[in-house]
Image 1 (cartoon, rainbow, N blue to C red):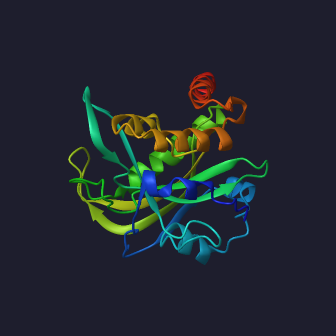
Image 2: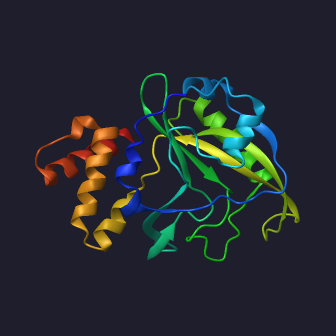
Length: 232
C-alpha cells in the first residue's frame, strides 16, 4: 500500500470531527476498481480485507486512526449556511498513486455524523451504481473527476420520497484528489480565523499546488486561487 505521511493530520482538529462508521447488518462486495487499487498499492488485497477496510472501515495500517467528517460552509437555496459538513460520509484514509500524487479515500452512505441533521446517513444501492457508472464514464472521456473505488451492499431497507421504497442500501468509497472545498475556506473567513486559514492555504499549496508557494501569505493565497481556477 502506498501510504503517505498522512498530511491531513495537520488539519484534522480545526477542520473535521472524528466519527464512527455505521454497523451494517450485511456486507456484499458489488464493485471494486482493480485498476486504481493497483495504482495506490491495494491491488493485492484479498476479498476479506476489502470488506474489512471498505465496509467495516477498520483503519488502513499506518493511516488515519479514525474516520473524519469534514466541516465547511456554503450556500443552499440562495442563502449562506454556516452549518454544513459531511452528513453521510467521511475521510477514511490518504494514499499516493504510482506517480506519488496524494489522494483521499472518502465515503458516501457510511452512516450519520454530527452534520447529518435529519438525514439517515445512508446511500441507496441504486444511487451507488449510478455514481460508479457516471464516474467511470467521465474518466473514460478524460474528465478529471473522482473515481468510484468500491461499492458494498449493506443489507438495510431505505425509504426515499423520490424513488420507489423500500430500496436497498450500500456504501460507496471514492478516490479523489482532495476533500477540501471552497466552503472549507469560507468557514475560516466566516469565523475570521486567520490562523486556520493560513494553515489551510499552506496545506493546499504544499500538497496540491507547490507552484503557488510564496513567503508572503496574502500573495500565496492569491496564487493558490489562481492555480485552482486555472486547473478547474
